[in-house]
Image (cartoon, rainbow, N blue to C red):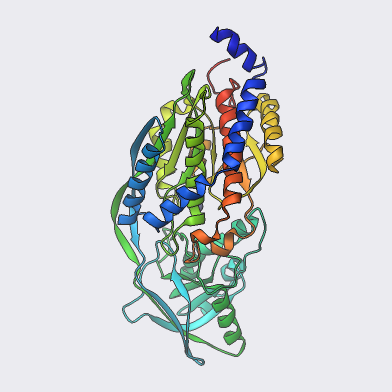
Length: 457
Ligand SMILES: [Zn+2]
């Protein structure tokens, strides 16, 4: 009886047949017509708020997630440890000392060291971009505060971020190499508000560690205009510092598959956020989307064949620590992970679908794309980036898809005090839930395998 039923629901190419497809339509309707993901997001951003890794808020986020999974009826919920060095933001101030004394809006970059107690006061040398700094004469830079004024371009894909973020990541070490005392960057963001954007920077091992901070975009403009009028002296004060090693957790919840529970479809998002806002977009929205998909599928009259595993990763922002811990802890059973998707690009809506699967699985992925079409999602190539937390597993061969959300406004708020719940449109969030649910259900219902490494065949 069961055998007949399966034969009817799966064609020989793994394509899903009528009963599974009508269940999928119902799932999509349930996703679209409720704002449950928004409720989850409101709960996270109000009851926990900011969740910077290495703080007590980080652990409150873990407890919140564990209880939320349990409350929503996930079959199994557990924590897996992830350890990382912590960093303490402290205070940050910046002001033009001469010739036009006035304060500028600034924030420290993640992992930055402090200035001296009375700050660093020095003349500013400005560069249009990182390459200009790299090719500068050290005599021009030595003993000064370097200002890198590279602007980020707006796009729905966020492609401007990749180009601009190298300034944040490497600006301090490039400036230190030329003898600079500190580095200030124009925020990596597309807004014109007075909110500086924080984010991770990294010191190279062979250079001195100098203080690193970001000015808001209007303040970067202001400094540039002051510099047009002649030499400018700035004072920058940061009390940022390293904290102790910290133990937190990846939070994992499962909806068990009805037939092959050992085969997993993984949905990921990161639980940590930066501390300036409440992390509603980055990545509270992702947490809410994948959690709501889990809830919806757990409530289906008939569960899909495979298990849905939702992973809320620890400390993505300061170096993918939770993702690396997960990949290390699950390396020996990675072949149980059939496929994965991550939501870490704000609150949607999803408009584009890309894959990174073996050639033989593409006809099935076209069927997924067909089911996504009514949601306004088009099909892209087979070169999916996956998501930041999926990268360590992708390096070990994990197949992935990307359900790419519209990021036109994402970098107006990203890593700022302005990343708050009011920026989220509940309807767009629900559309993202419908898209992620479509992918998760279809990939959990089929017997198609997505990697040549995988079991079967
Ligand atoms: Zn993120």
